[in-house]
Length: 397
Image 1 (cartoon, rainbow, N blue to C red):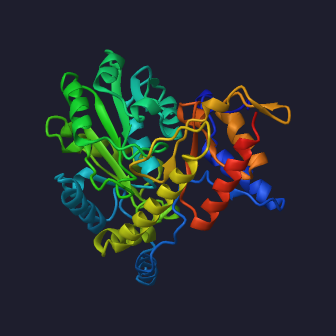
Image 2: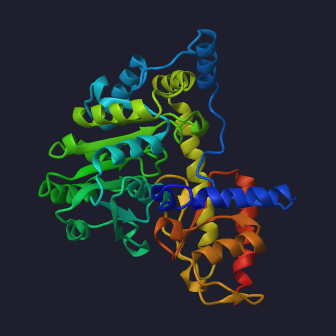
Image 3: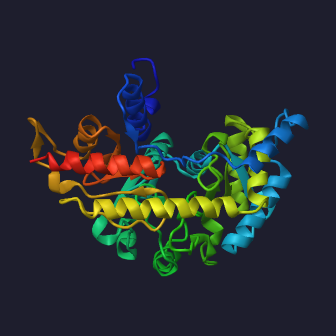
Protein backbone atom coordinates (compact mmCIF):
# COMPACT_ATOMS: atom_id res chain seq x y z
CA UNK A 1 0.00 0.00 0.00
CA UNK A 2 2.68 2.43 -1.13
CA UNK A 3 0.42 5.37 -1.88
CA UNK A 4 -1.83 5.47 1.16
CA UNK A 5 -1.22 7.53 4.27
CA UNK A 6 0.78 6.39 7.28
CA UNK A 7 -2.42 6.94 9.23
CA UNK A 8 -4.23 4.28 7.22
CA UNK A 9 -1.30 1.88 7.27
CA UNK A 10 -1.31 2.05 11.08
CA UNK A 11 -4.83 0.60 11.21
CA UNK A 12 -5.69 -3.09 11.40
CA UNK A 13 -8.59 -4.58 9.52
CA UNK A 14 -11.56 -5.63 11.64
CA UNK A 15 -11.24 -9.34 12.44
CA UNK A 16 -14.96 -9.56 13.13
CA UNK A 17 -15.70 -8.38 9.61
CA UNK A 18 -12.89 -10.52 8.18
CA UNK A 19 -14.25 -13.66 9.84
CA UNK A 20 -17.74 -12.89 8.59
CA UNK A 21 -16.40 -12.46 5.06
CA UNK A 22 -14.45 -15.72 5.24
CA UNK A 23 -17.50 -17.65 6.42
CA UNK A 24 -19.62 -16.09 3.69
CA UNK A 25 -17.03 -17.08 1.09
CA UNK A 26 -17.17 -20.69 2.31
CA UNK A 27 -20.96 -20.58 2.21
CA UNK A 28 -20.76 -19.42 -1.40
CA UNK A 29 -18.78 -22.59 -2.14
CA UNK A 30 -21.69 -24.65 -0.85
CA UNK A 31 -20.23 -25.37 2.59
CA UNK A 32 -22.81 -25.37 5.40
CA UNK A 33 -21.29 -22.77 7.73
CA UNK A 34 -23.09 -21.60 10.88
CA UNK A 35 -22.02 -18.03 11.45
CA UNK A 36 -21.49 -17.20 15.12
CA UNK A 37 -19.17 -14.29 14.38
CA UNK A 38 -21.72 -11.60 13.60
CA UNK A 39 -22.46 -8.93 16.18
CA UNK A 40 -26.04 -8.16 15.26
CA UNK A 41 -29.51 -9.42 16.19
CA UNK A 42 -30.96 -11.99 13.81
CA UNK A 43 -34.43 -10.49 14.20
CA UNK A 44 -36.10 -8.25 11.63
CA UNK A 45 -36.73 -4.61 12.47
CA UNK A 46 -40.20 -4.43 14.09
CA UNK A 47 -43.03 -3.56 11.71
CA UNK A 48 -44.07 -0.33 13.42
CA UNK A 49 -40.54 1.02 12.99
CA UNK A 50 -40.45 0.05 9.33
CA UNK A 51 -43.84 1.71 8.85
CA UNK A 52 -42.50 4.96 10.30
CA UNK A 53 -39.73 4.90 7.69
CA UNK A 54 -42.27 4.30 4.90
CA UNK A 55 -44.36 7.17 6.20
CA UNK A 56 -41.30 9.41 6.25
CA UNK A 57 -40.61 8.60 2.61
CA UNK A 58 -44.19 9.42 1.67
CA UNK A 59 -43.92 12.67 3.65
CA UNK A 60 -40.86 13.61 1.59
CA UNK A 61 -38.22 13.53 4.29
CA UNK A 62 -35.67 13.37 1.52
CA UNK A 63 -33.63 16.49 2.19
CA UNK A 64 -30.51 17.04 4.26
CA UNK A 65 -31.17 16.56 7.95
CA UNK A 66 -29.66 18.81 10.64
CA UNK A 67 -26.07 17.85 11.43
CA UNK A 68 -26.92 16.96 15.03
CA UNK A 69 -30.22 15.22 14.21
CA UNK A 70 -33.87 16.20 13.90
CA UNK A 71 -35.15 18.16 16.92
CA UNK A 72 -37.95 15.67 17.67
CA UNK A 73 -35.48 12.77 17.72
CA UNK A 74 -33.08 14.64 20.00
CA UNK A 75 -35.94 15.45 22.38
CA UNK A 76 -36.94 11.77 22.39
CA UNK A 77 -33.33 10.81 23.19
CA UNK A 78 -33.36 13.28 26.11
CA UNK A 79 -36.52 11.62 27.40
CA UNK A 80 -34.95 8.17 27.00
CA UNK A 81 -31.90 9.27 29.01
CA UNK A 82 -34.18 10.74 31.71
CA UNK A 83 -36.55 7.76 31.92
CA UNK A 84 -34.00 4.95 31.62
CA UNK A 85 -30.84 6.44 33.09
CA UNK A 86 -31.95 9.35 35.35
CA UNK A 87 -29.80 11.68 33.25
CA UNK A 88 -30.77 15.24 32.40
CA UNK A 89 -29.69 16.48 28.98
CA UNK A 90 -30.95 19.27 26.77
CA UNK A 91 -31.37 18.62 23.03
CA UNK A 92 -28.26 20.75 22.45
CA UNK A 93 -26.24 18.09 24.28
CA UNK A 94 -27.40 15.30 21.97
CA UNK A 95 -25.62 14.36 18.74
CA UNK A 96 -27.19 11.85 16.35
CA UNK A 97 -24.60 10.06 14.24
CA UNK A 98 -24.21 7.27 11.70
CA UNK A 99 -24.12 4.49 14.29
CA UNK A 100 -22.61 4.28 17.77
CA UNK A 101 -19.21 3.58 16.20
CA UNK A 102 -19.41 7.00 14.56
CA UNK A 103 -20.36 8.59 17.88
CA UNK A 104 -17.30 7.09 19.58
CA UNK A 105 -15.05 8.19 16.72
CA UNK A 106 -16.45 11.72 17.01
CA UNK A 107 -15.49 11.90 20.67
CA UNK A 108 -12.06 10.32 20.23
CA UNK A 109 -11.16 12.65 17.36
CA UNK A 110 -12.52 15.64 19.26
CA UNK A 111 -10.48 15.17 22.43
CA UNK A 112 -7.36 13.11 21.64
CA UNK A 113 -4.20 14.84 20.39
CA UNK A 114 -1.08 13.05 19.11
CA UNK A 115 0.67 11.38 22.04
CA UNK A 116 -2.31 11.52 24.37
CA UNK A 117 -2.99 8.28 26.23
CA UNK A 118 -6.36 6.56 26.14
CA UNK A 119 -7.07 3.78 28.62
CA UNK A 120 -8.83 0.80 27.07
CA UNK A 121 -9.81 -2.14 29.29
CA UNK A 122 -9.28 -5.53 27.64
CA UNK A 123 -11.16 -7.42 26.39
CA UNK A 124 -12.22 -4.49 24.22
CA UNK A 125 -14.28 -3.98 21.11
CA UNK A 126 -11.97 -4.11 18.14
CA UNK A 127 -12.60 -0.57 16.87
CA UNK A 128 -11.64 1.26 20.07
CA UNK A 129 -7.90 0.85 19.71
CA UNK A 130 -8.02 1.55 15.97
CA UNK A 131 -9.89 4.81 16.51
CA UNK A 132 -7.30 5.88 19.06
CA UNK A 133 -4.60 5.10 16.49
CA UNK A 134 -6.48 7.21 13.94
CA UNK A 135 -6.34 10.13 16.37
CA UNK A 136 -2.59 9.44 16.80
CA UNK A 137 -3.16 8.68 20.45
CA UNK A 138 -1.51 5.95 22.51
CA UNK A 139 -3.54 2.97 23.71
CA UNK A 140 -2.96 1.96 27.33
CA UNK A 141 -4.44 -1.49 27.77
CA UNK A 142 -5.66 -2.77 31.16
CA UNK A 143 -6.06 -6.54 31.07
CA UNK A 144 -9.05 -8.00 32.88
CA UNK A 145 -9.32 -11.74 32.29
CA UNK A 146 -11.94 -14.34 32.99
CA UNK A 147 -10.88 -14.73 36.66
CA UNK A 148 -12.08 -11.17 37.36
CA UNK A 149 -15.11 -11.54 35.09
CA UNK A 150 -13.49 -9.30 32.49
CA UNK A 151 -13.88 -6.13 34.60
CA UNK A 152 -11.09 -3.82 35.71
CA UNK A 153 -10.55 -2.84 39.33
CA UNK A 154 -10.02 0.66 40.77
CA UNK A 155 -6.43 -0.31 41.60
CA UNK A 156 -5.77 -1.29 37.99
CA UNK A 157 -7.28 1.97 36.78
CA UNK A 158 -5.21 4.07 39.17
CA UNK A 159 -2.04 2.29 38.11
CA UNK A 160 -2.71 2.97 34.42
CA UNK A 161 -3.22 6.73 34.78
CA UNK A 162 -0.32 9.03 33.90
CA UNK A 163 -0.02 12.79 33.27
CA UNK A 164 -0.65 11.98 29.58
CA UNK A 165 -3.98 10.23 30.17
CA UNK A 166 -6.70 12.03 28.20
CA UNK A 167 -9.59 9.55 28.12
CA UNK A 168 -10.90 6.08 28.87
CA UNK A 169 -13.34 3.97 26.87
CA UNK A 170 -15.67 1.82 28.96
CA UNK A 171 -18.22 -0.64 27.57
CA UNK A 172 -21.04 -2.03 29.72
CA UNK A 173 -22.67 -4.36 28.82
CA UNK A 174 -19.50 -5.44 27.09
CA UNK A 175 -18.70 -6.53 23.60
CA UNK A 176 -17.12 -9.15 23.52
CA UNK A 177 -17.69 -10.53 27.03
CA UNK A 178 -21.22 -9.53 28.05
CA UNK A 179 -19.86 -8.26 31.38
CA UNK A 180 -21.87 -5.55 33.14
CA UNK A 181 -20.38 -3.24 35.77
CA UNK A 182 -22.56 -2.99 38.86
CA UNK A 183 -23.27 0.35 40.50
CA UNK A 184 -20.82 -0.48 43.30
CA UNK A 185 -18.10 -1.43 40.79
CA UNK A 186 -18.62 1.82 38.89
CA UNK A 187 -18.57 3.75 42.17
CA UNK A 188 -15.09 2.36 42.82
CA UNK A 189 -13.89 3.58 39.42
CA UNK A 190 -15.55 6.96 39.97
CA UNK A 191 -13.54 7.46 43.16
CA UNK A 192 -10.40 7.17 41.03
CA UNK A 193 -11.72 9.52 38.36
CA UNK A 194 -12.54 12.10 41.03
CA UNK A 195 -8.81 12.33 41.77
CA UNK A 196 -8.03 12.91 38.08
CA UNK A 197 -10.42 15.64 36.89
CA UNK A 198 -9.02 15.99 33.37
CA UNK A 199 -9.89 12.50 32.13
CA UNK A 200 -12.77 12.21 29.64
CA UNK A 201 -14.90 9.07 30.04
CA UNK A 202 -16.47 7.55 26.92
CA UNK A 203 -19.20 5.16 28.03
CA UNK A 204 -20.36 2.78 25.31
CA UNK A 205 -23.82 1.57 26.37
CA UNK A 206 -25.12 0.27 23.03
CA UNK A 207 -26.10 -3.10 24.58
CA UNK A 208 -27.99 -1.47 27.47
CA UNK A 209 -31.30 -3.21 26.85
CA UNK A 210 -29.83 -6.65 26.18
CA UNK A 211 -29.48 -7.25 29.87
CA UNK A 212 -30.07 -10.45 31.84
CA UNK A 213 -29.66 -9.04 35.35
CA UNK A 214 -32.32 -6.36 35.01
CA UNK A 215 -30.22 -3.44 36.19
CA UNK A 216 -28.15 -1.06 34.08
CA UNK A 217 -26.17 1.76 35.62
CA UNK A 218 -24.58 4.43 33.48
CA UNK A 219 -21.37 5.88 34.88
CA UNK A 220 -22.78 9.30 33.96
CA UNK A 221 -25.28 8.84 36.81
CA UNK A 222 -22.53 9.82 39.27
CA UNK A 223 -22.85 13.64 39.58
CA UNK A 224 -19.19 14.23 40.42
CA UNK A 225 -18.04 13.16 36.94
CA UNK A 226 -21.12 13.62 34.72
CA UNK A 227 -19.73 16.76 33.09
CA UNK A 228 -16.89 14.78 31.51
CA UNK A 229 -18.79 11.68 30.41
CA UNK A 230 -19.95 11.04 26.85
CA UNK A 231 -22.71 8.42 26.92
CA UNK A 232 -22.92 6.58 23.61
CA UNK A 233 -25.94 4.53 22.62
CA UNK A 234 -28.09 3.80 19.58
CA UNK A 235 -30.91 1.76 18.12
CA UNK A 236 -28.91 -0.97 16.37
CA UNK A 237 -28.90 -3.68 19.03
CA UNK A 238 -32.02 -2.99 21.08
CA UNK A 239 -34.36 -2.65 18.10
CA UNK A 240 -32.68 -4.91 15.51
CA UNK A 241 -31.75 -1.87 13.40
CA UNK A 242 -28.06 -2.42 12.65
CA UNK A 243 -28.40 -1.49 8.98
CA UNK A 244 -30.27 1.73 9.68
CA UNK A 245 -27.07 3.25 11.10
CA UNK A 246 -28.35 5.51 13.86
CA UNK A 247 -26.28 6.07 16.98
CA UNK A 248 -26.37 8.95 19.42
CA UNK A 249 -24.61 10.42 22.39
CA UNK A 250 -25.35 12.67 25.34
CA UNK A 251 -22.42 14.79 26.49
CA UNK A 252 -21.43 18.04 28.19
CA UNK A 253 -22.26 20.96 25.93
CA UNK A 254 -18.66 21.78 25.06
CA UNK A 255 -18.07 18.23 23.83
CA UNK A 256 -21.37 18.08 21.94
CA UNK A 257 -20.41 21.31 20.15
CA UNK A 258 -17.01 19.85 19.27
CA UNK A 259 -18.61 16.72 17.81
CA UNK A 260 -21.14 18.87 15.93
CA UNK A 261 -18.24 20.78 14.36
CA UNK A 262 -16.40 17.58 13.42
CA UNK A 263 -19.45 15.77 12.08
CA UNK A 264 -20.37 18.82 10.01
CA UNK A 265 -17.16 18.39 8.05
CA UNK A 266 -17.18 14.58 7.88
CA UNK A 267 -20.68 13.27 7.24
CA UNK A 268 -23.23 15.98 8.04
CA UNK A 269 -26.53 14.61 9.34
CA UNK A 270 -27.49 10.95 9.47
CA UNK A 271 -30.09 9.50 7.09
CA UNK A 272 -33.38 11.39 7.31
CA UNK A 273 -35.47 8.25 6.85
CA UNK A 274 -33.46 6.26 9.40
CA UNK A 275 -33.86 9.07 11.94
CA UNK A 276 -37.64 8.91 11.62
CA UNK A 277 -37.49 5.15 12.12
CA UNK A 278 -35.30 5.66 15.20
CA UNK A 279 -37.80 8.16 16.58
CA UNK A 280 -40.57 5.58 16.28
CA UNK A 281 -38.37 3.02 18.01
CA UNK A 282 -37.75 5.27 21.00
CA UNK A 283 -41.24 6.68 21.55
CA UNK A 284 -43.34 3.57 20.89
CA UNK A 285 -44.14 0.58 23.08
CA UNK A 286 -40.93 -1.17 24.15
CA UNK A 287 -42.37 -4.69 24.11
CA UNK A 288 -40.26 -5.58 21.06
CA UNK A 289 -37.04 -5.01 22.99
CA UNK A 290 -38.30 -7.07 25.93
CA UNK A 291 -39.29 -9.93 23.60
CA UNK A 292 -35.88 -9.95 21.92
CA UNK A 293 -34.15 -9.78 25.30
CA UNK A 294 -36.11 -12.82 26.46
CA UNK A 295 -35.02 -14.76 23.36
CA UNK A 296 -31.37 -13.79 23.91
CA UNK A 297 -31.57 -14.93 27.52
CA UNK A 298 -32.93 -18.33 26.45
CA UNK A 299 -30.18 -18.70 23.87
CA UNK A 300 -27.50 -17.68 26.35
CA UNK A 301 -28.69 -20.26 28.85
CA UNK A 302 -28.68 -22.98 26.20
CA UNK A 303 -25.18 -22.16 24.96
CA UNK A 304 -23.83 -22.03 28.52
CA UNK A 305 -25.42 -25.39 29.33
CA UNK A 306 -23.71 -26.98 26.33
CA UNK A 307 -20.33 -25.34 26.87
CA UNK A 308 -20.35 -26.46 30.51
CA UNK A 309 -20.17 -30.06 29.27
CA UNK A 310 -17.16 -29.46 26.98
CA UNK A 311 -13.97 -30.56 28.69
CA UNK A 312 -11.26 -27.91 28.72
CA UNK A 313 -13.52 -24.92 28.10
CA UNK A 314 -13.93 -22.24 30.78
CA UNK A 315 -16.80 -19.81 30.31
CA UNK A 316 -18.14 -16.96 32.41
CA UNK A 317 -21.90 -16.36 32.30
CA UNK A 318 -22.47 -13.04 30.50
CA UNK A 319 -24.85 -10.62 32.19
CA UNK A 320 -25.74 -8.86 28.94
CA UNK A 321 -25.15 -8.46 25.18
CA UNK A 322 -25.35 -11.59 23.00
CA UNK A 323 -21.90 -13.10 23.25
CA UNK A 324 -20.07 -15.69 25.27
CA UNK A 325 -16.29 -15.38 25.52
CA UNK A 326 -14.99 -18.81 26.53
CA UNK A 327 -11.38 -19.44 27.52
CA UNK A 328 -9.98 -22.06 25.13
CA UNK A 329 -6.36 -21.97 26.29
CA UNK A 330 -6.46 -25.56 27.61
CA UNK A 331 -6.33 -26.68 23.96
CA UNK A 332 -3.31 -24.57 23.02
CA UNK A 333 -0.29 -26.68 22.19
CA UNK A 334 -2.50 -29.60 21.12
CA UNK A 335 -3.18 -30.79 17.58
CA UNK A 336 -5.64 -32.33 15.16
CA UNK A 337 -4.48 -34.14 12.03
CA UNK A 338 -1.06 -32.54 12.30
CA UNK A 339 -2.33 -28.98 12.71
CA UNK A 340 -1.22 -27.45 16.02
CA UNK A 341 -3.38 -24.92 17.83
CA UNK A 342 -1.21 -22.20 19.33
CA UNK A 343 -3.73 -19.44 20.05
CA UNK A 344 -7.18 -18.02 19.45
CA UNK A 345 -6.63 -17.41 15.72
CA UNK A 346 -5.76 -21.07 15.23
CA UNK A 347 -8.73 -22.11 17.34
CA UNK A 348 -11.21 -20.02 15.36
CA UNK A 349 -9.77 -21.26 12.08
CA UNK A 350 -9.93 -24.86 13.32
CA UNK A 351 -13.57 -24.50 14.37
CA UNK A 352 -14.36 -22.97 10.99
CA UNK A 353 -12.65 -25.67 8.94
CA UNK A 354 -13.32 -28.69 11.16
CA UNK A 355 -16.59 -27.71 12.83
CA UNK A 356 -17.95 -25.40 10.13
CA UNK A 357 -18.83 -22.73 12.66
CA UNK A 358 -17.52 -19.16 12.44
CA UNK A 359 -16.27 -17.49 15.64
CA UNK A 360 -13.90 -14.56 16.23
CA UNK A 361 -10.42 -14.98 17.74
CA UNK A 362 -10.02 -13.39 21.14
CA UNK A 363 -6.74 -11.74 20.18
CA UNK A 364 -8.82 -9.30 18.13
CA UNK A 365 -10.30 -8.15 21.44
CA UNK A 366 -7.08 -8.18 23.43
CA UNK A 367 -7.41 -11.63 25.04
CA UNK A 368 -5.77 -14.46 23.13
CA UNK A 369 -7.03 -17.07 25.60
CA UNK A 370 -10.60 -16.71 24.40
CA UNK A 371 -12.84 -16.71 21.35
CA UNK A 372 -16.05 -14.75 20.84
CA UNK A 373 -19.22 -16.69 20.07
CA UNK A 374 -22.38 -14.78 19.19
CA UNK A 375 -25.67 -16.42 20.16
CA UNK A 376 -27.65 -13.93 18.07
CA UNK A 377 -28.88 -16.66 15.77
CA UNK A 378 -31.75 -19.14 15.73
CA UNK A 379 -32.22 -21.81 18.39
CA UNK A 380 -31.92 -24.43 15.66
CA UNK A 381 -28.58 -23.04 14.50
CA UNK A 382 -27.28 -22.96 18.07
CA UNK A 383 -28.13 -26.62 18.61
CA UNK A 384 -26.24 -27.59 15.46
CA UNK A 385 -23.35 -25.24 16.24
CA UNK A 386 -22.86 -26.58 19.75
CA UNK A 387 -22.98 -30.17 18.43
CA UNK A 388 -20.28 -29.29 15.91
CA UNK A 389 -18.15 -27.43 18.44
CA UNK A 390 -18.30 -30.31 20.91
CA UNK A 391 -17.30 -32.86 18.24
CA UNK A 392 -14.48 -30.66 16.92
CA UNK A 393 -12.98 -30.13 20.38
CA UNK A 394 -13.15 -33.85 21.20
CA UNK A 395 -11.01 -34.49 18.11
CA UNK A 396 -8.13 -32.40 19.51
CA UNK A 397 -5.40 -34.33 21.24
